[in-house]
Image (cartoon, rainbow, N blue to C red; front, side, top):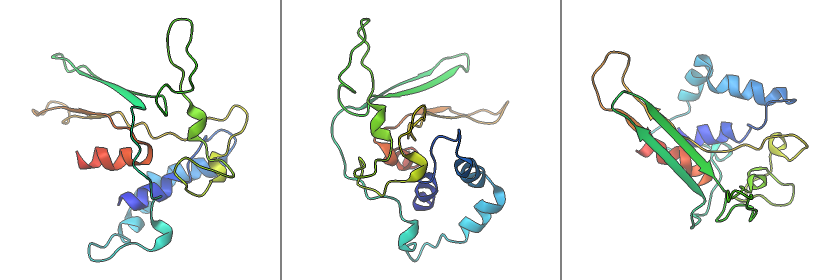
Length: 167
């Protein structure tokens, strides 16, 4: 399931000016698309090679921070902030805030951070936002139901999804 999700996500990018990104996103939440993708999942064999997610090396160091707050009044906040590498871009504002190096989230023609194939939907262009894998997540029961709330955050790029799912 994660291989399929990451394969689809690799075709995402800034939707402004790129209709293919919008179509990909719409397909990802379509019940008919989910039904056809579900047929690809088989517990007794691996997926074919073109549906595998990128193989990512584990990187060490603190590159993201998160604040997860759950109050007694059912107010929940989940915020994840990324610098993309320790000390971000190395630029500090006069107020002492480190700026991130979000340029690393773009795909580059000759090199990507995770050594995956550069995707045209995520190539750098003026005023374009890079694809990012920050996943602040809040899980709570339906309205009026008893239960425990869960508030999660994850970092480490493409591995954030599998981390959230495992928890």
